[in-house]
Length: 451
Ligand code: NDP
Image 1 (cartoon, rainbow, N blue to C red):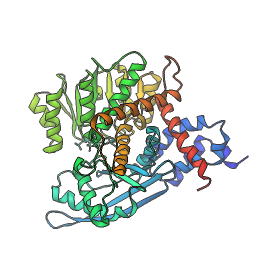
Image 2 (image 1 turned 90 degrees about the vertical axis):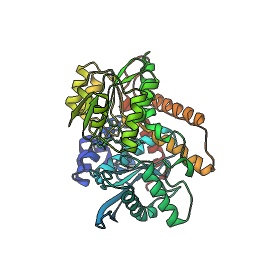
Image 3 (image 1 turned 135 degrees about the vertical axis):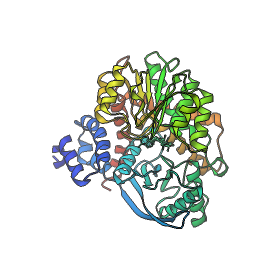
Image 4 (image 1 turned 120 degrees about the vertical axis):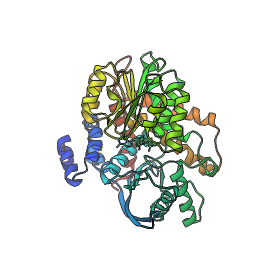
């Protein structure tokens, strides 16, 4: 009997914390998976012996580098950049880049770990990675953003490639930043290849990539509701965030007949009982994407309430779509949502609910779609962008819309297969997602031997 047989969940987590001191988000993400996987592999010796979970929680590599750039006044600025390549057992590393002052190694390791599972769930051949910088894009001119992106790529290009590691956007990295990054990659390497996804349509981007994460999170909710004979139509919905994921979640909820009454940014949230309909969403998109303004302006413009420094979770509603950032639903807020009659949560953001909050939702038998399943639509369409780039052609919007729906349905069904919800029973989508994603990556790792 191998020594590893004797490691239980607590010992596993103690070891992880010892090896990764102070990396709380990473501990949290691994724990959320390990709880289910220890249970699942209890009678599956082969995974214990090969130390599969331990290996999955040790990134293949973490690259950290200095990024120097000059601001518009000629001051030299120094930032830190990272790329975490977590696991490439089922395909090249794939995952976004985040530019935000809160970015650190713990956050990127949590995101890269999660990404490995998420990418597995899509059914596409993609491993897991994540990267970014503590650079704050807020308030910077386009030229400053360009200079930063060029400097960042001047180091990153050594570590990425269309068959090695294919980054994309995330918080603070949208179409503008991807354009600057791709331009610099092409300039340095003299190669036009699909090394990034989320590109502009003119230079190899995929249709519906901007919409995919938000749309996918709403489709997932629709599939959960359909399973119990219900739908999004007529439901009041809380959305947090007002960036890429939030905007397209709002659009899809509207298309399916739901009503969105909140949106938020890092300053607070807006409560709009009229509903953020198509016209108001167009205003919001212009405000956030073009004018890069604050939500207070939305509240002033439409004469609705703005609550500074708070999140939307006290507003009573049927469904919640957290689409801003990690740990944005505390356990107390989860309890409030449950108390107010919430029926379902679909996580557009990565790990937006605290661990005990998830437990509260599942205990109350609320439909709960964890981020690694609910927001996988974005990376799935990125995977399709990679295929289009490799084929040097672009697929139609109809083809891509259909692919996104069918991928989200496939993820939903895999979560039901492993979530214990036979028949009409309550399905544990957290367990379902973790186990389904684990099996594929773990079996590939077993095939490779000890590497
Ligand atoms: P954006 O940068 O487009 O938008 C982020 C939104 O969240 C903004 O409204 C921002 O407010 C708000 N926000 C950011 N940080 C905080 C914070 N610390 N507290 C409160 N609000 C905050 O990012 P995305 O929409 O792309 O990403 C949102 C989430 O979705 C992230 O968790 C990301 O990892 C996840 N995700 C994104 C995917 C994608 O395809 N883009 C794919 C899968 C997951 P402000 O305007 O004030 O900055």
